Image (cartoon, rainbow, N blue to C red; front, top):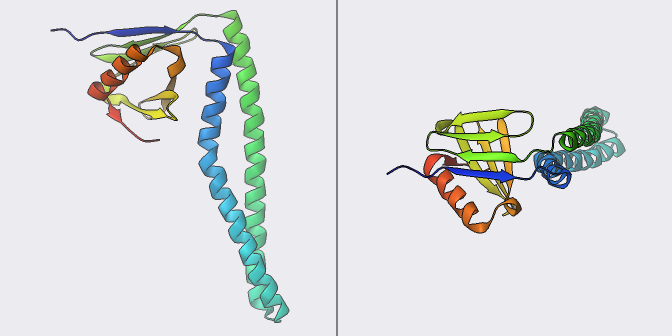
Length: 181
């Protein structure tokens, strides 16, 4: 018996592309920003120790803790600066890509074949054998497929009907590995 080949055409629109890219950016930076906020909070606590040592005239420890606080604050603020710069860059990238989508408004083709996974959009086509594929479900809204640990494909569940989505998930369960992101 031959295995079923699943092929889907999903629209490539400005709204969908923007939504997916912004979601991915927030998801990637969320953990990093939380860690940075913890460092900022720890720096503030250590600042209190530096002030206490300064008041008790133990200038050696006050200087040590003060230096640590300055370094922590510089790191945290440079990190926020980097975040804002990257956020601006992603907005520019999205705007450029939207103009390309308007010019080349072809659907995205998803193919789940017994031997490989294939993704094709207006500018490229990718084929990966199943040993290179992992997947997960993000926020019950997206199907997140990773190929070769560096290529990411996001299928918005709203683009395919429930039965085809279930077939796709069953296919991925059989052929690839589930991995938490």
